[in-house]
Length: 84
Image: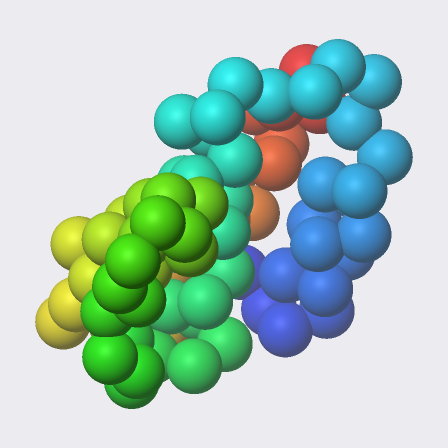
């Protein structure tokens, strides 16, 4: 289980990756971060043509029901894999 300090460290490390991850990985990082810090999605789905916001909301909504600690652990593990 990742501690809050390990999670915060992983967040900082994610900002210094040498290669930009694919959009799918970026969405995964975003959704795990939001689930770990806020829990289940708590806003209405964006409408219109804001496709970036819609993709982010959808990615987060897919994690509905996932425990915040589990999301934190998965986020830390993903950042470690990306760092090599």
